[in-house]
Length: 237
Ligand SMILES: Nc1ncnc2c1ncn2[C@@H]1O[C@H](COP(=O)(O)OP(=O)(O)OP(=O)(O)O)[C@@H](O)[C@H]1O
Ligand SMILES: [Mg+2]
Image 1 (cartoon, rainbow, N blue to C red):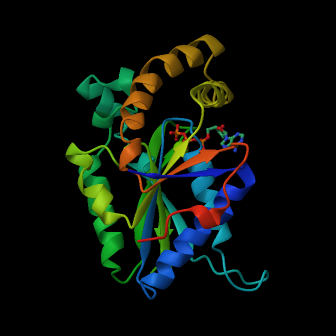
Image 2: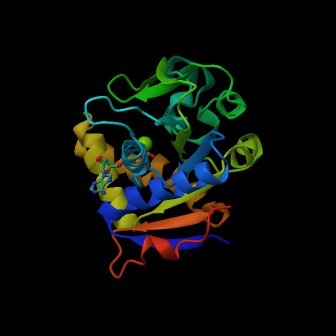
């Protein structure tokens, strides 16, 4: 059963960065991997990068990046491979990712071997992943892993135990879908096609992800009125 944390938009990143810092202190400096999970368009990438930004240390002139975002999206199979497999029309579904490659990368990050460890990143401009786009140096103590299927099970089952905590970003479906349509059109889809994709493949994936909500350690309700202070969040394990 997950704990629910209601937070106004601006308060979420500082509160979650605080949880990551507490996990780091509890582990006496052992590298921390936290997961940001949620349906398509819930705001995972935006929130994960805001959390990482909160964890920058040092003087403003010489900031030291102690946290890096590693996106599950980087493990999208290439478009050419999806065409070959006949899965291009449902890009984004669980079987259109290299789940085993993602798990192997998380194991390397967990091992804390001398770096750097490189992770791939999905580029919306080209609709394909790019290898070696994210560099995780040994000094990086917090890795913010973000993506849809962190709690899905089957091929993804090892992911949960490789993460210290998972945070499920929960947003009302109407807001989430509207943001997703806007993002698809901003990246060149015609409005009708954007809506059809959001109500079609994206919605199928959203339902799969929603069914994993209870496996998260914390459910983060964004933009909610009457927000509970971060202190009411459950203690970090
Ligand atoms: N707090 C917010 N307020 C307003 N818009 C937001 C907020 N957070 C994210 N967005 C916008 O909503 C859209 C979806 O956000 P984002 O890309 O972070 O979601 P995501 O969960 O990573 O989606 P996906 O699963 O498709 O990768 C983006 O266009 C983003 O700019
Ligand atoms: Mg994203």
